[in-house]
Structure formats: C-alpha cells, structure tokens
Length: 178
Image (tube, rainbow, N blue to C red; front, side, top):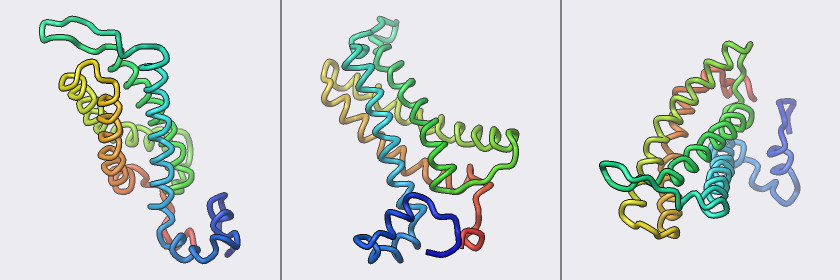
C-alpha cells in the first residue's frame, strides 16, 4: 500500500486472502464501495420499512379519500425509512465512496442539499412504485415488499449518477488520491 489515505476497505482488500483482487479493487474502488453502501442503505431502508409495516402494523392504517383508499401507514412508514436511508447514504458516500472534502458548514450543507434534492427526486419513483403495488395487489404484504425491492434497484442506479455528476463537487481527483 502507498502513502495515500488508507481506509478499512483498503486494509481488508490488502489481506493475503484478497491481495490478488487488489488491482481490480483499486481501479474500481468507488463503484465497488457504492454498491456495498448501496446495499447497506437498502438494508436500512427495508429494515425500517419492515419495522413500521410489520412490527408496528402500519400497513393496516388506511384512509378513505374521494379517490379511493390511501394506505397512509405504508406511505408514512416508507417516508421515514427513506429519510433515514438518505442520511446514512450521505454520510457513507461522502466519506468512503466519493471521499468528498468540504470546507466549513456552509459548503457541507450545500452539498447535503444537492444530495437531498437528488434523493427526493428518486423518492418520487420509490413512493410511486410502492403505492402502485398497494393498488395493484391490495392486502398482499409479500408483493408490497417485492415492489419495494424493485424500486430500490432503480433508485440505487439513478442515485449513483446523481451523486457522481451533480452532488459531490468537493471530491478529490484521482491524482490527489494516488
């Protein structure tokens, strides 16, 4: 390993058992870490959703509206899980994936605002996808969770491009990292 910043993932990949993967890892580190933390973010999102829907029973909270039944519990449990996942994703993407350096609170809040804006735009996809599943398969918790998983895949891919090209302006260049 060189004199550059070494994180826990570098240390793991430099173990003898993984050393043969070192060149591939170094070349694709950002994408690999994004996938890893994307999976962790998805686990946070799904875990919190499952907690609200199945442990607290929020999937049964429904409101009658002029347009039909609105699954309020599903919707609000989903919003809370997405918000917690967004905070988790920002921290891990900033520190590990894009190694973004911000100087001062104002710059960090601007970066977080861009991140949040991107995530809110993809939240529309996720909320819409889950709500569509509720309408298509009412009272089917399994298909609701499958729809949540499918929307997660779409959201992860779209969020990567938003983060890479629009959010993390303070990221270090490849020359600065090596």
